[in-house]
Length: 171
Image 1 (cartoon, rainbow, N blue to C red):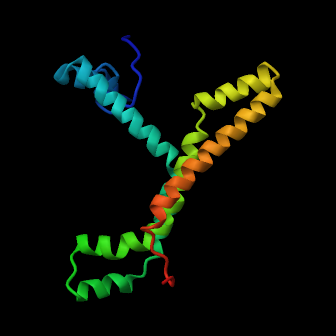
Image 2: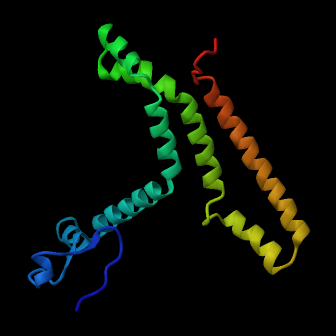
Image 3: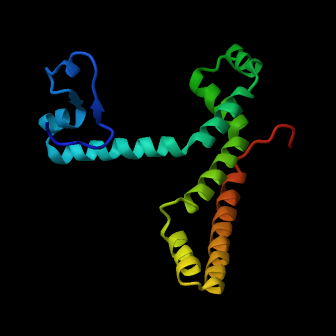
């Protein structure tokens, strides 16, 4: 039957491959191993797995950015084109400044999300102290310290980013 392969590059097949000519499974990992070698194929598979996981976790950020892009008036692009701006100039002079407040929200959400990730060792340690060792006071103190660390980091990130943010109507 063959070994079960895992990862992004392992795909169940249909069509000709399902008829048995390719063994019932088209495995991009097997194909890459043949041409790239085991080490490089595993690296490509790991990279694609990380990209897939990142895209899976970025749904809110993508929705926020799409909403910000839809809020840009077409007349601003038309005025830029009349002035002779190319697409690159339009992006840096129109698109990016107008979505910069949305970018701040995306950065804040991403930082908070990264610190509350399910794979976070600090949160695992706090849960261990609270729910398995019944050290509620210690877990609460750790939680407050962790909150303050995140808060200081977010304040620093916002201080750096806010200087470059354009707000409509602000002078």
